[in-house]
Image (tube, rainbow, N blue to C red):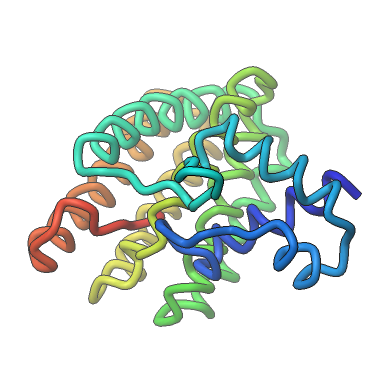
Length: 215
């Protein structure tokens, strides 16, 4: 029950149901998700500990990231993701590689639908994390991915970015399949760099420092 409440609230943040600045009320969440208030209270405390929620007086609101925090997050993400790709090129099983190719194939069908693309993108990257076969790295990347959920406007919504990102995904998988750890690392690092650049352009066009993105 506790894990369900936590997962339900986190998924709602990831899907943009709850956005940065939104106030989360324990009783309303319990009613919404059909669970008792105790697991909801514990889930909110856990999310606050993880900096996903911020206290505003006696209330909890979904955290926001400013421009510098977003830049710092992308820096950390690029390093960790690149390491995951390098390790995946060394340790991924044939079955894991086939799954990655299949995800790229499936994701072609959601091009043009930013929410579905964002969800597919999280799934794709998570599979690379698992293919690294390093549990400590996977744990760190899970925290990064959770924090990315605070940037609800996906860079995949930018015109043409979805198709380009899918091509980048394919290049990453091909390098992993070839066992070329250096190429896999470079391809994934470039992929994150391109996503960050797209986010910066989105922010500049919106004219604000807190314009979010979750890719």
